[in-house]
Amino acid sequence: MSLIQKARLKSLWVMHYDCGSCNGCDIEILAALTPKFDVERFGIVNIGDPKQADVLLVTGPANHRNKEVLTNLFDQMPAPKLVMAIGTCACSGGIFHNCANVLGGIDKVIPVDVYIPGCAVRPEAIIDGVVLALNKLAGVAPVDDEEEA
Amino acid sequence: MNPVSTLIAVTLALVTPIIGGLLAGVDRKLTARMQERMGPPLVQPFYDVLKLWGKEPMIANRMQPVLAFGYLGFALVAAGLVTFQQDLLLILFVMGMADLCLTTAAVSVKSPYSYLGGRREFLAMLSYEPVILMVDIAIFLVTGSFTVAGIYAYGKPLAMVLPLALIALQFVLVIEMKKSPYDISGSSHAHQELVRGVFTEFSGYTMALVELGHWAKMATTLMIFSLFWAPNPVIGAAISLGMFFITLVVDNIYPRLTWQNMLKTTWSVGFVLVLINVAALVLGGII
Image 1: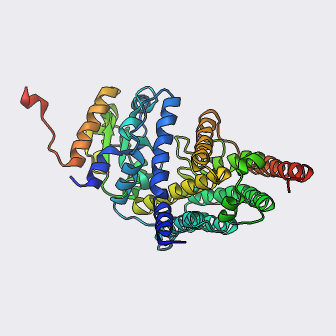
Image 2: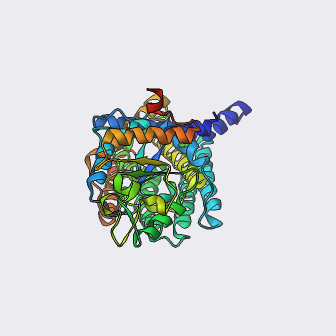
Image 3: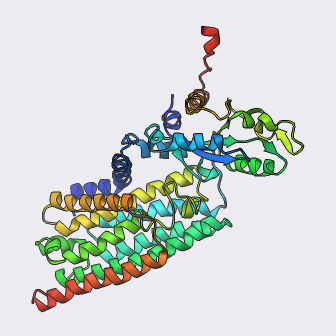
């Protein structure tokens, strides 16, 4: 593993975009970023700038209004980049899936690397998702827990 | 200068980004401890820069990478001028050129956040550069020379004759390191009303260069502060590291203030402190 590859795994800068979630998942994300959980010890920093971010955290379902913003943010992020769909709404549209204005999950608009279901997601699930994302960045195949058991 | 001391001076100038990076790691660790957190490892800033270096290049215009290289280059030249014991005024102007590269890069793109950050960085320069100039003049009045070599030749520690000037430089360090209450041009913390201010449009390797340049400038500034106890470099380093620590404490207990407050404080408090110091020296018959 090259030095830059190693540095990538130790320094994830995350950016959070709310597609119109009910704020349940947003609160869980912000809780995971507070000093109590101290994610900075793993090099994870919350940053507001898509040009410097490595991970895009998206909550809420995609709709006709926010799909352009979402695409714009995704395009502004330099590779290698990861997208995490956080919460059932971001994964599939959730309870809004058949609304007239809703497209569905955010994977209808941008490619998603990690899906984290839950309404609202549990912080443990977010951390599990981050581990999956790190494996993807390192090029390691994810372990299927159910198959092992 | 003999070849050995030339080699030492060149090496010292070239490792300023590494010293600055380690200090940035200490900064993040100490800040975390002050907030009752563990904090990232000491070498975390180097992980960040390596990662930024390995990212896909995505530049806003062709001028930006040139100016990012210019920022690091001028910062290294300023470090070299200090280690080669050159003119303090020249060091101030070369550091100003480095800042000018950063601000020009920030205002060369059409992003309002970057533009506002660049303008605020200009205001920061307007706040602290006259104070440094005043301190340089005070040093000239005491030592009779504007050069770093002159400070060494003076023999006695400058901190004993210019203590108030050192306090004025503490304000400069807070602005220079972009720490609260005067981190108005670019936010390194979670308050993101400017997105990233002057750094908004940098990404990938240009951001890595800007980080390295910022560390080099920070280390050079601290190196200049250590000249206030030139006869003994250990005490000099202790003084500059003490000022670094005070900056971190201030960063953690102060909210961000406005640029008006920054300009008023540095110009009034900074100027007055240096003037009182010089007046006391004149009245005391020292100069």
